[in-house]
Figure 1 (tube, rainbow, N blue to C red):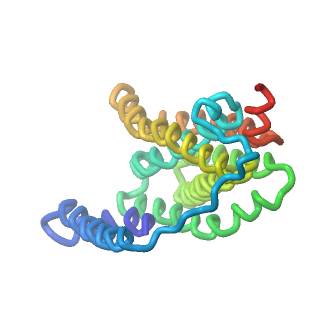
Figure 2 (figure 1 turned 135 degrees about the vertical axis):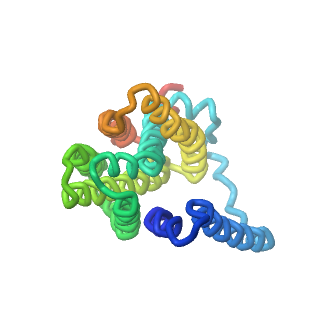
Length: 258
């Protein structure tokens, strides 16, 4: 559905004199439908997990902040989310600057979203099954760097390949972080704390991405500079994920220090 939104926004804005206002109104209908379904969920029965074993040490937020793996995962989650939200905000504009029409840029973005569907099924299983968790990290890094580097080329087919690689790496990075929330903790309590900490820190980082790129764009007035920023962010995701995929759990790094 996210891909459909990106691909059809421009065509919908061209079908009447209301241009972009019509396009926004249609997505508003979907938002209202989502609210209806969420209200229904509020009435659904709740389920409670079993209590934590009394012999298992419980974790606090203070404990989590002492783990380099927790920080590595929080930063990598935030940076890969920053890439995704910045791609949503700025990549179509970059594609237009590289010679595509607005409509074609929207379709290319849609394809980048669609390719994440099979990735969401395949990559988490791959991350869980492979012994060396840094192998998926290297694959993600290669796809990110290759995809963003190809955006310098002003050829339609090359730009399409670039978008497919970027979409694949964005989906893979997100899936990897989700899997690591479980794999990098020995207990349910640890996994819950790691997930909450990583996403709290991560989304604060992620939210700043489109704004910072917009500020830089206002100063430099050249969309291509954002490609260099994407490449820098990809390198940072690689470094932080390498820390997060160290062959230890957060409990190993926390309680060993006590």
